[in-house]
Image (cartoon, rainbow, N blue to C red; front, side, top):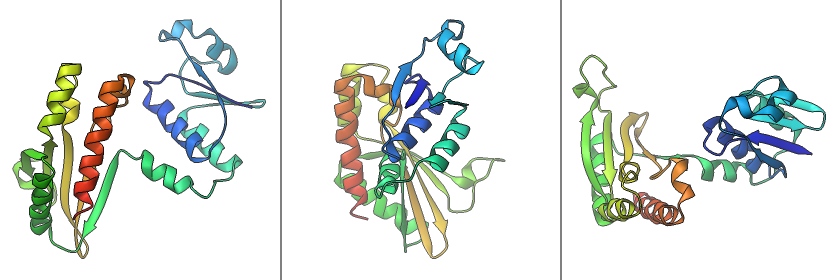
Length: 211
């Protein structure tokens, strides 16, 4: 019997839940109190108050790295584990035969066709002393309809409706790395924001599929 002591907002706990999903393991989820001083059960079990903590039979494992290593060493990976991992990633990376300049123009074209705007652009050589490699471009993109919808639900959410994109050279061409819109997990607590998340993510991925 696996029991995970965790908090939904904790990124280290998220890492563990992701691997539990990849391995398709059944487990009991125990959400801990916010105040560490109130985590009596966790303290008695592990001698500490931080999460995540995993109880696997008689074993108690603390720390996300240690828990993940234990899970991968103990339980076999199902055939679709890699697919679970891919869906769970917060970014997608595409490699193109074209150079960074041509890739950037192609990206502008498909985003425009999907009603997605590039709202800022910084090239690596514009960052002063903190230079990125030549040809590296950092972009910020947004879909106005998603920003408006998010603002109507929660005035703090539109900042999360923008998403970063990087275009850079690789051997034989270029790569485009796109962070999934609304990647911040706290947004999923609101059903309407979650619907906006899925709609925008689908729109972005459909556009990238045309590259």
